[in-house]
Amino acid sequence: MKHAPTIGDMYEGLSVDILNRVLPGGLGLRVVSGFAHDGGGRLSGQLDCMVVRGEGEKLPYTDSHVWHVKDVIAVVEVKKTLHSAELRDAFSQLNTVSEIEHAYYQRAGEELDDPGRSMGPSVRTFSEMTGKIAWDGEKFAALPFEEDALLQTLLLEQVSSIRVVVGMHGFKRERAFRRSMISYLEENVARTGFGPANFPQLIISGGFSLVKTNGRPFMAVLVDGWWPFYFSTPENPLRLLMEFIWTRLDEVYGLGWEAWGEDLETEVGRTLLSFRAVRVDGRSGWAVKAHDFDQKALDSVPATRQWSPEFVGEEEFVLLTRLNQGQEVCRDDPEVISWLKSRGVEFDDVCDRLLKTHLVALSGQRLELIAKECHLAILPTGEYIAAENSTGRLTRWLSQ
Image (cartoon, rainbow, N blue to C red; front, side):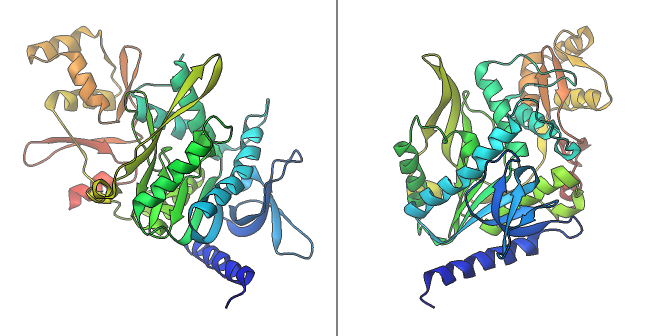
């Protein structure tokens, strides 16, 4: 077949078939093509695939639909081959979705009316990334400009659709793919539409992918105030696509831990871009730093590693136990300070080690649990371990 439009239709049909296979049944989800709108007259560009819920409108005499952005779970732009030109085109096309999404969700007085999209996941991700509590259950904490910009971006990421570029074929080398994105960004420095919230969550080019660390499901802690925001990986792209979509569906519908299988292997990202919110001459924006590793350095990083819980000291284990029991752990608690001193340990040192587990965060002088289910165990070797176990991952690890 040499007819380009027909070939394009075939690849789009393949993508629709794949998406239909990975979506769980019983949720009323559909895969359609067409346009997204914001209910206020703004329309996206034409979209190859949309994973949607609720009701949309079928355009007469076509197979295309128009769907409200609040009911769009994911948007997939399909390319037979993804190189630099196709990357730019797909990025621009998906930006037409993010533009109307951001306008809709930031509209003054907009009622989201969606109990399945609470801000809890974003607040927890922020705490994992920064070690700070942003929400005390009643109000937001006063945050520095850089951290507030990060939190607002995470909140926007949570409600926005998952935007994906799928190139069935593409770059032969991971570094070439990374260099193409860096070059594209260099061409658009200081232009609007290139902040963290504008980037697709996943870009696939053949066997390589660029992945966003927005906490759903991939998270990266800040490094000297910089957010390691995008990474590359040779990991199975279909697995990455499924993890993004199923994480969103779990947040909205609560799929349960049975949905995740063994889940004892985690991806290892090769950092590509880092972002940091800045103010320059009274204007706010994002500074970006590119990490341009050579191919040998990239190849030296494994694509995955076996998951394991956090191995902690006895002091950390005791304080985590107190937190699990609903007791407070404060920097100025005489009982805690006295016990730690009797063991020759400073509170600040224990606190730092606990923050590195990403199970707790600081709220002023007080440590608080941020894990959904922080489970603890003592191994037969006498070692102490702790982990998030809301998906049953620690239980499966222990059983092995």
